[in-house]
Amino acid sequence: MNSDLLTETLQKGFRLTLGATASLIEAIQDPQGSTRKFSEMGTDVNRITEELEAKGAVTEQEARQFVDGMLTQMPNPFSQSSTSTQSRTVYTVATPISDPSIQPDLEDLTRQLADIRREIEALKQQNGQG
Picture 1: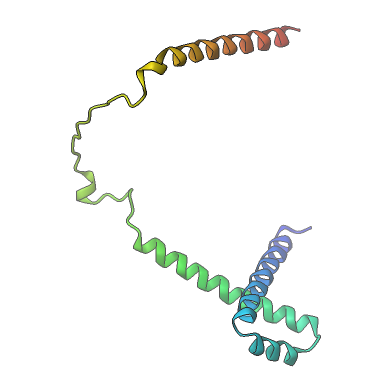
Picture 2: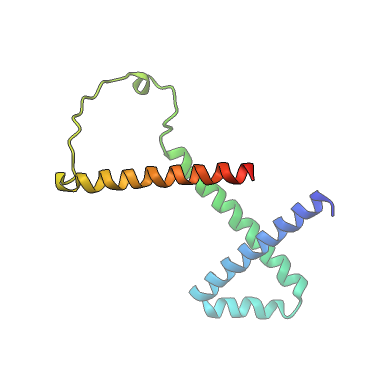
């Protein structure tokens, strides 16, 4: 199958699904208007498909514009503006937040993890040689 044809088919399927979803939302919001619209189209599957694909294309374009608008409003953390290139030193103090009474348990678990890691490495070496 030609990759352009596959891409076009996927794009049509996406727009058709998007159009069907948009039509479903409209049908929920205005059941009488949707019933009237689809009854005018009748049972012509090609016409319904074309209508849904066109609605999907419009919805896709609106969504792209919405996302582009949101992205232009967001500040760019990677911009080279003069305020972002000035560095400041921030001093902090780290304070332990754990209960000191659990320290022996943490050390025991750390030893157990180290033992397990050694066992895994030994098994890997045995499997690699065998």
